[in-house]
View (tube, rainbow, N blue to C red):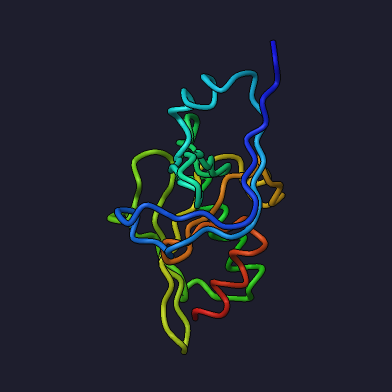
Length: 160
């Protein structure tokens, strides 16, 4: 089998339906066995980009795929780690079930004197989440933006 590399460099226009910035800047590389395999990665959240010459590309966002084996207790443990790492007390965070995603992320609210932050935490092994390894660790969603654990701490701290 041939290995195909999907690579985007420079800028690309985002479809207006995504309601995101008008262009993507940077670089992304993904390896797959075939172009068809890239198109069939339905479990991953993805969107297509059209480069300035009309070619279409797909961006796969690792760390955002639905979690198959998850539970609320794991997400609560990660929330406890966040509180410990940020030196928050028990009154500064709470579980918020109405923000649960249904595919492995559980809603929480962290608050401080400066405001509150909504965080969706994956309910998998807390140690895997805390490792913050790209392509291995699922991301936390902080006010809708996705971040590995170490980066998420900074955004939570700055938001509260």
